[in-house]
Image 1 (spheres, rainbow, N blue to C red):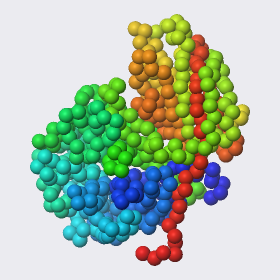
Image 2: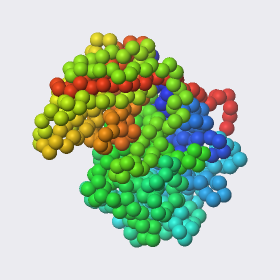
Image 3: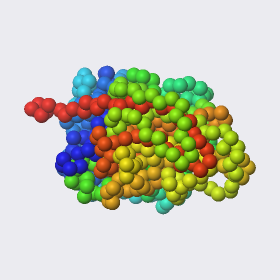
Image 4: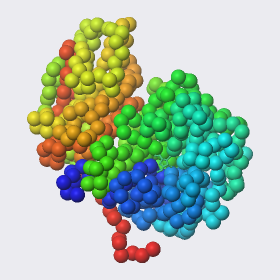
Length: 539
Ligand code: DQQ
């Protein structure tokens, strides 16, 4: 529908029409990045789920391919649900995915490419003996889904984990297999956290404590930590924790019990769910994909004829400086879309002011910004015991001595619509500084039937670090990264005026005391080619 067509993005992955959700089975094979996804071919709402498929040379430009798998067997009649890829020693690929059976029982199924010599992996075969796993005793038929990529044990077996729950405790079951057909369930669990509910889309992967590259999923040993990520069905957020994997009994323990899976750190403090990583052997990095839904009404989605995006793929690294969190950063290939560069150096933004930035077109941007806050004001500010929270604050309108300050993106000339992406520094009663990173959607749109929450969280800032921001703006999405990707927020916003050539970008400082000095690079971004598959071809 042309009425809402400005909400369509220019460089984010999305199907041509209808509904998309979780990323599935991402992998690199014979020169191509493959991306599969939960897809409803019939409507812009969830249902009739099959696997969509697309390929890319660079994770940015995509070619849509025919559906990889449809719901054509009793063991996936109610949906070809989420799954993961494993690349075997001989280079062959296997897919494990959840089927919702004709009776709506969740089972695990095996599939593989029909022709490994086809770099596009167009045809997929389901193993005739499916399902390969059914819910074990004590597990509800509807709580057994989303197998991970398999990794090797020291004995040379493959190991996978599958999310579930017992009462209100989220759990990750563990299985060993030699052939992906026969499985042995381990007595223990990879992990369990009371009160977190059903664990969807569990992810499990190693990160290096010393190197700047990613690790193959089977890597273990000194200098390696392991991450567990779960998607909380009740809350619809992705949480991760860093810890130690004990390979012998297949368990994992968090470094810090108070920041355990499901109760600690989120990948993203905005809208971002069912994420999945893969090891990219092409560039020796671990790449994260995440599903970004809509936050407008279902009626609007039906009117648009599409719903959901995928995040710009993010490289994931262990933050060696803090030792307590991951770093997420848009893959470097996104920089190939940068067109005109606008530079602004040492712009002084006084307390209580807004500074327009002269950028010709501000609907497709890549922004890098650094902020220095006036040192005297920092020292002068009185500390207090009051705890700040982005979500429950008054947003960018709530003034403190040392914030908020940052950018207004997808703003119209008169600032009727704008989305502030900002820092807020709160001084504690002991003089300690707590820095928060927030997105305020409350004035993002003149439309009333869209979500206008204030998002955000604490961001770690080490001594003598400047505050830094990266923001990707693409029509109806804002992905923002603070301090090199320690804290990330994705917002979906639906401006009605700040669209196409009418969209602008501003600096703002709503602090009462501190002035800030900002230096920015702002690139206007090209659109990516996301092409449809030639229709005349029959498969
Ligand atoms: N989406 C899939 C499930 C998964 C959920 C169904 C997470 O396999 O648990 O579309 O969004």
